[in-house]
Image (cartoon, rainbow, N blue to C red; front, side, top):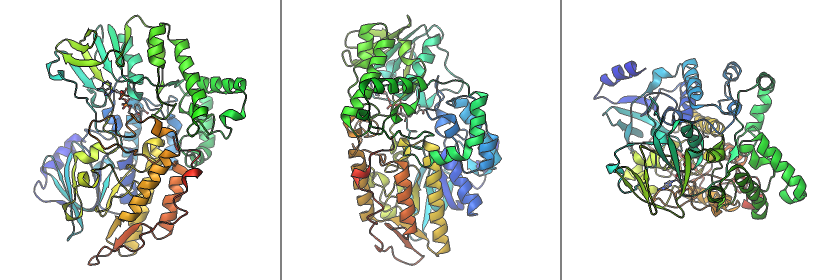
Length: 575
Ligand code: N01
């Protein structure tokens, strides 16, 4: 594909390629959006991606232990019965190389590669109001002009490398987990320092520890984790999946978080403490994200959540033999699952190994990186390799790196100066015909992502089809509908315990200087889907459509009262 790409880049270096739609990103979102617009609507469409292959986040995140936290039989597209029927996953949670194989299978099956330009990073996208076109330029100078611009850049794609003084002076090697070398990293016998203990760090540390001479895990904020209980899928399970594909699809499309399990209807204090302990033990043994589904009120009732938090902290103390290390790991300051809850394979047990040390940055913070390692207040840790498992400038970082300008030259950075504002996570006022897939203000990262992605791509496709059927050239979210939606997004978050973990990438607090706003929609995928459907059925309330020559109007500026469910109805948020 690279060769074809290079040949293409040689063609028409000067002239812009004229298209109906341009998609930025060839991950789960971009691939399915291409299928919808090209094959369903018959539009001319191209996809641009900075990566050297399809796969999106899975192209970049190939660190040791990288695998998906969604169960494989739900971490896939459901739009094609044939695709669902012919693909068979090997493990309960798919590993990065297997997901890449799946992405290639999809791209080949639907003949997508001919419309994808790889190694092509978008530098700018400017809206030309008179022509009603998006003019897009890549870093290599290639130009495209399209009526519709769809950003499918992923929520977690801009790596966050913290500015720790002295990194330039480090004489060893260092890597960010989301920019992992394709040839891998040989840790054999090396002194390795890993900074970060989020979902990524929790996956990476146990694998790094297997070959490293010594691993020091630098932990700033301790976090809960539940065993993934990963393993090969049994023949019985594969058979169950084959026989129940339709039912599983129904479940993922009707549960608030898009996972293949339902949230139990019982509440924590409906059962006795003994019964509750049994339920938690059973959920721990089952493993995975469904731990949070064993009671319906874990995310809305602090006292209820405390019972899960105490159970999980107790498990850390049971597993980790050194009491000081166990205390540091279990000293968790936020309710369970108010930050994205990791799942793991042997994470806590890794601290029982002779070659692993926890460095508690709360009591011994990092001062700087030196030529030979990391200097904390109390000690210089000599290292050959530093691994930054330090997360992402999530949800807005990648979009804001592109010079995106809407009507009147308004930059997206200006529009989002005080934090991202979108209507349904799909559009931004002032940016006509631009759609943001899994954008801030949509369930996105609080949902099993392929499920959220299929809904977005279908909705965008229906909206464009509606425009074409009705002779409309431009669609734009209206400011007042957007303000109402932003208020509803805040209301939805406030109805949960999630604001109690105010240091998290959900709020943007992990990146210095970033506006602090709760970004994903916590009202649940089911509610979100219904709202989007209602809005479309009601003539796309809150959006303005115009034909060529028509001025943008402020008609249909209100959203129906039913569409935005009241916050008190949010009792099973999509987390
Ligand atoms: O990133 P994170 P992640 N000094 O931001 C620490 C998805 N995901 O890559 O909490 C010291 O969660 C930081 O500490 P603190 C998933 O949605 C999915 O782990 O800021 N430490 C934290 O411990 C997930 O939530 C899967 O105090 C510093 C860590 O780095 C999201 O990606 C797998 C620091 C960052 O944790 C992000 O997870 C993996 C500093 N200066 C991830 N700066 C699958 O489903 C940051 N940290 C496969």
